[in-house]
Image (cartoon, rainbow over all chains, first blue to last red; front, side, top):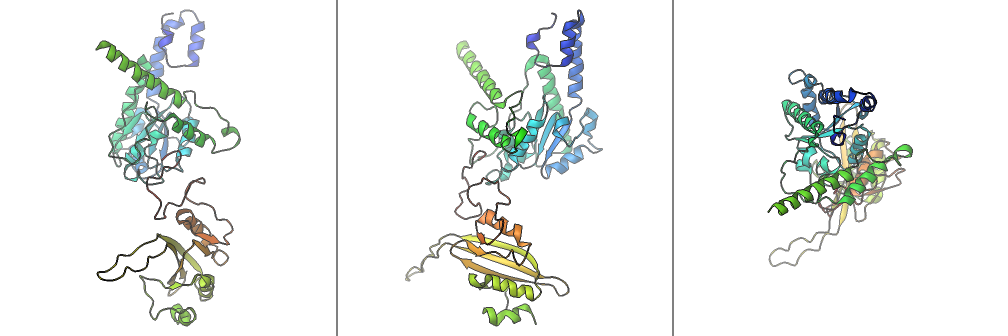
Length: 250
Length: 160
């Protein structure tokens, strides 16, 4: 086999077909390129838009900036979309609904936190009813700071996400941006999803809360294909491993 | 004749209406007040606003004994409007030491969600309300966040 299957972190039904056809496996690198091109240039957006950032987000889809130019169209259903853009303040009552919609999006999927409120809660973050950053609820890949960000910053954020997806497809793993620095918070123990110091029981509690929203099919649904808890453990293991390497080198 | 003149003797109101300080009436006459105003044409339930006052010890002046502490109490202000030409509003307050006030839902259907909101945020119980559930906060929330003794860093499972 010409292609190292172990390094491939992306599944596609075409691969199964091509592996059975002699000679075609060599073409898989080309197929990878095609899939990468089509994935990065058709980032359909699910707008989780709750407040004023939504208005700025609308203008990013309008003529002057026009995110259509990189193939991003806005769809009002999570089931068609690749990217969830959280634009606005998320309250504690809204958070399980955001989580539920995030779980309805098919893999692979990414999340963009747009604006200060989605990133950290901003000046609402110490209010009893506001989630201190959407990254304590769903894993965030790209942060677009601003209050609200410009429309062209949204386009820039999508382009950063494209670059990250290309790096992921090249086998470099999915990088994630750091949460921008925020001022002192009353509850700094609310770490983001994937933070090694995050309390795992918080993730479980949030999963339970989002699953228990509905009845029937939703109440007993299993977790994502990529459980968020596992991602956190993997990242924690990576950090520990790199620290060990450093100590050995010294 | 304005509503104030018509109701002044019956409810023992002050001489002149004051926009800043609506009159305080006894809680036992709360429903009677609303019914009288409704007969007078105040058919529109504008708003209800409950306020929590925690126990307070006023400071003593120099050379005087400290005044008695003000006990914890709740104030519920109700505003009605008479629609149509020469429209006007009428507001009054009731002050209670326990957060229990009779509901105005049988008189004004519009009181339904307004009273639920005040119950949710301030924790005033509107006695006789047919469906007194939380309106804005999550259903399993603990406490009433607009009470003055509600700590800002109350850790609420699982987000705060």
